[in-house]
Image 1 (cartoon, helix red, strand yellow):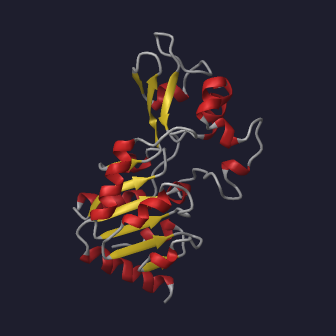
Image 2 (cartoon, one colour):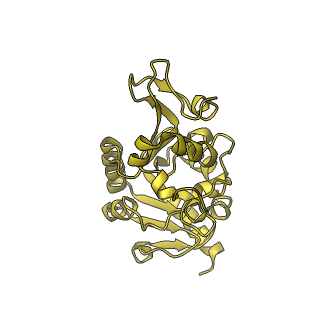
Image 3 (tube, helix red, strand yellow):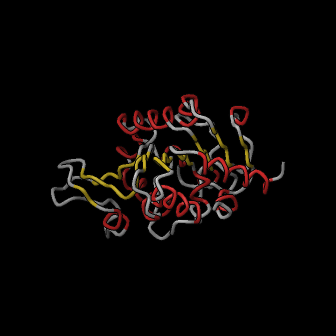
Length: 242
């Protein structure tokens, strides 16, 4: 079966499903121009003063906030990017009552920018930032456009992005809701993720519905579980959904 036939099959699956959950990884955002982490051109394969995995850890943030924010402001500022066709189609499916929720590993806020309402952000979001001292909220513009390298609150506290760094736990409420949504939906569409990193590989095991679809440029270790596998860019696939 070629990809055109597979996309026709995907359209039919969507039509006959009533509760769809979408699980997306970095491949959803790369279509908007945002670099991913692990590909050959990703952030982890670029040369920096410190390894990105180290910079994006809780210990590094606490001990070296200046270097953290230099990297964060330069590499993780998603405010200049716009949603792509996949984001908009997902928002449309939600508006039509087909899509129950979007579960994302991305922190860029593009699903909400496209109009999606029920978005579960497993790794947090650059759009939310809180003072570590008084817990006051600050938006992304304040942090990314701060004249000081380290953004600070009026109370003197450092403002920390609400993103899950290495060594930090996932938000348990969001994780539990994602698990519940996956275990109760009748169709699960997974796109733009290799499914090799926790919690993605773990959450998928809870799917009990009828249609499991995997859309990814490369093969994944869980392809064998799927009813339909499409090896293509997510934008190419979603642009052909009706």
